[in-house]
Image (cartoon, rainbow, N blue to C red; front, side, top):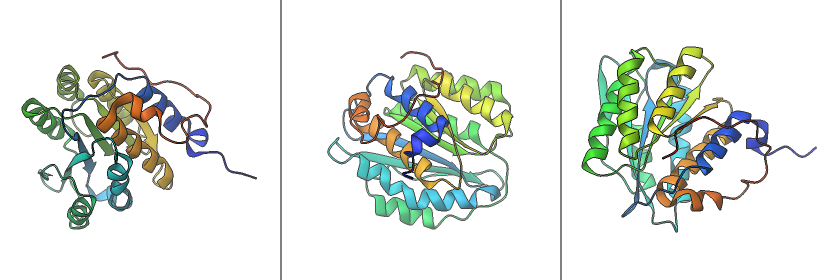
Length: 231
């Protein structure tokens, strides 16, 4: 029996893609600028390895759309937060990711959003991708920063691994307040994460019109639509 496409088998992915397609087009002046923020604390090794392999998909998906510049951000250990320059080469991003080893520590989503706000204040960041499975911080200051990102036109796309309900609530709020979207993914489903990353990359580089032209977008039934403010 033929398998259903990934978005048909994963209602969360389908809902995320439908929410993303309904957003207004981003219109970057140059290459689309995307921040790729990944939790590198101890529980994240399998998903970090996946992201290392899949990050090139974001660059390949935006060929012909003006391209993409990606900044890798991660946190781990005792208060360690790092960010690369905005990179336009998939091989260089892969090299830098391969040099990172996960390390036990607390989440630093607040610091990540502070950094994103500072970056987009200097020069527009078209999208923030946040990948994680935990959030150990107070939600109110995080929500305030998410709203500030939304006011500056930088939506956060929160991809959650695992089913922690507190994380689900927090990631949904960050997505809603910033004008972005939330979607779950399973670390066993490489295809789901690949499709999510490609979709946001295309949105960052070419907007809603480019996203609508992605192959396979009509293959799935709509299981629901994520809430979010119109921008």
